[in-house]
Image (cartoon, rainbow, N blue to C red; front, side, top):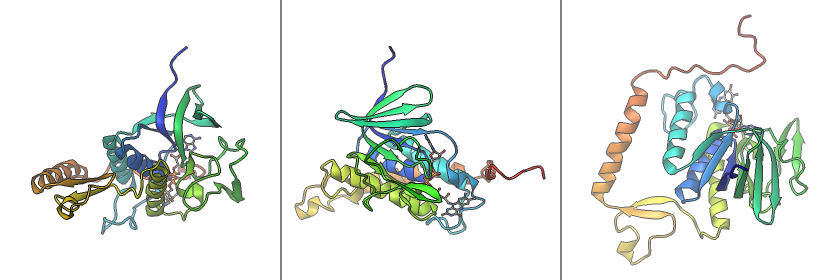
Length: 246
Ligand SMILES: Cc1cc2nc3c(=O)[nH]c(=O)nc-3n(C[C@H](O)[C@H](O)[C@H](O)COP(=O)(O)OP(=O)(O)OC[C@H]3O[C@@H](n4cnc5c(N)ncnc54)[C@H](O)[C@@H]3O)c2cc1C
């Protein structure tokens, strides 16, 4: 029998919330797999004008591509897979996919917007029917199933990309803190910011000197520049029920 895949954290759903959550837990060093099938909703946007950092807006397909590249650089694996069922047991989670894979993981972050069918059999998961389906959380992304978190629109967060991104980050940080990493920051600080005050560099932080800061900035410029030379070629995806030919 083929060996079953494992990860420390399985993220279900590779939209904005799932990708950002994955980036944070992977930066901490957790082996992270993002299992997703279908398009992130933001691919339908025609021009994204309310995501901070882009004064004249940005092509939403380009933003998603940049997010994926960032999550991959952090160490996330992207797997094209539809999740059909999640089981929780003493040894953690088993994540079943439509192709027959069974992933084992210690943590799961579910970020599939209104698709909740793979969770419905779990007694301790409360599904909220508000016309669309959501999952109840404690307000910080936790469910009553230990180790199962909900991120983005699926947690009934407001329907904007920046909110989904922020909530993905918040849920990831909660998970890391629940894993006993106190006050988790994920900061890059200038040299001596902590040590210059006789303080330890806190968990999830690093200090870098001026040369390293310049090296990283140069790499950032070289990474981004090609993406902004030409309009991004992919057009918005239409709502599936709109007839494009009429
Ligand atoms: C036309 C349109 C325009 C918009 N414009 C803007 C805008 O201008 N500004 C703004 O802030 N927001 C906008 N939004 C809203 C924004 O796109 C969403 O709020 C945000 O992207 C939600 O992110 P999410 O990660 O929670 O969900 P999603 O992006 O929907 O991610 C969920 C992912 O999970 C996958 N998935 C579902 N079920 C499964 C399963 N069983 N197994 C594996 N994968 C699964 C889905 O295919 C999807 O890729 C727009 C939305 C639309 C439709």
